[in-house]
Amino acid sequence: MKATAKAPANIAFIKYWGKRNESLRIPMNSSISMNLSEVFTTTSVEFSKEYIDDALVINGNTVDGKEKERVSEFLDRIRKISKVKLNAKVVSKNNFPKGTGMASSASGFAALTLATTKALGLNLSEKELSILARLGSGSACRSIPDGIVEWKSGKQSNFSYAYSLYPPDYWDIQDVILIIGEKDKKISSTEGHALVESSPFYKSRIAKMDTKIRDIKKALKEKDFTKFGQIIEEEAVNMHAVMMTSKPGLFYWLPETLKFMLLVQNWRDNGVESYFTIDAGPNIHIICEGKSVNKLMKKIKELKGIKNAIVNKPSIGARLID
Ligand code: PMV
Image (cartoon, rainbow, N blue to C red):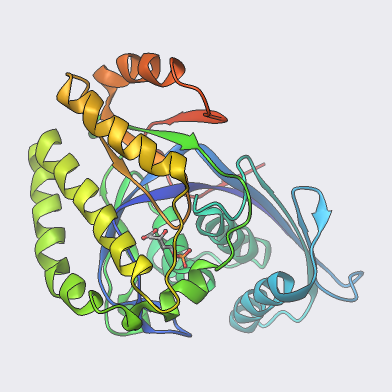
């Protein structure tokens, strides 16, 4: 009883920060993201009566404690649905650094959901997989469908899932990820979400989310890159303003992050049209159209202090592999 799945990380253009329901991971607002072609997790899950406990191996290291508990609890949900009581060995590999706001838990839980359900003989719909993945890690629900995705907030679990707005080849927009820091973050996003209401700016953020979603969908429909870029940049700064003003304040940026935010704006003023977005970590995602990526990479290569730049196209969602 074994299956292997591969799932992409995703970058949110309109972000999820704050939950309506903590344990069910139902977000306060809908969000919009793109699945990424070059950053992903591959996970194998095997159930066997030979295993006396669940085991978790990530990037070659056996993992215990809280992280393993979270995975075991997640497996329990699926064991309950399939009425199988066996223990499992989960072997997972990320091709990018963990805990740096690159949604390693999104790709991780999306791959885990697909591999586990398949290993247990369940054939779930995309919607059912997205709901299950969400229960493992909120943004994981967006790594199940293809391309550019909307996660409808929904007020109940069955209505809170992601679906594809556009397939990967709809629009040639690319995400150049600059890896600035690779250390685990001090406060996980799970803990961060719980602090959101302590920010005096949170209410005003939430009040504008429906309009933002409507505006970005219009920009996507019209392939209006300038409008789209302005919305995503403003949105990223808005979310970080809420993070920084919560109690305690969450500062995910490093000095290099701010340096690149300003550089992107400067390059834009000088003819290379790109916009930044940033998740819960120091790394910066520079979004451009395919036709500008070479010019952008030339600018990036001229600079010092960049550990790695990963150029991503829109990707398909989670898939089973051999
Ligand atoms: O799914 P979580 O709990 O890792 O939260 C992700 C939150 C952000 O990456 C900051 C925003 C988003 O929508 O992906």
